[in-house]
Length: 117
Image 1 (spheres, helix red, strand yellow):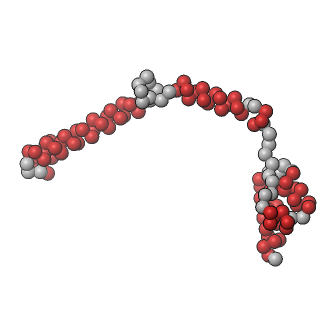
Image 2 (cartoon, helix red, strand yellow):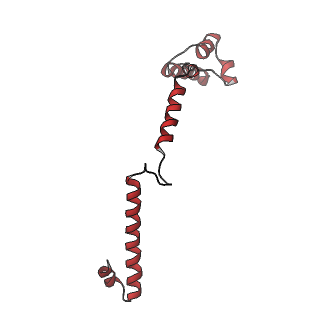
Image 3 (cartoon, rainbow, N blue to C red):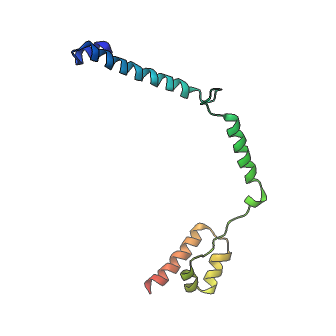
């Protein structure tokens, strides 16, 4: 590094400064790489794997609770679209459990009827 820098600058002071900066940056990158190589240690800035595992277990246990086992249903909430729907369409969109694709197709058909006038 100092030999290359000597070819770029004419004073020893700038050669020292630029060589120092390059070497300092390379050593910083090396220390960062060493820290990234083992993130689950006992240092203050390391990742706490035990608490992460406990949190993951809490989330998985929450998924087993009865409240999370229900299937969501779609409900029409727009006042203008409720007035334009027939009773049968409103019942089908509100209370039936359908796939996303069939619900989307029904809404497209409704929009095509109402948008055309």
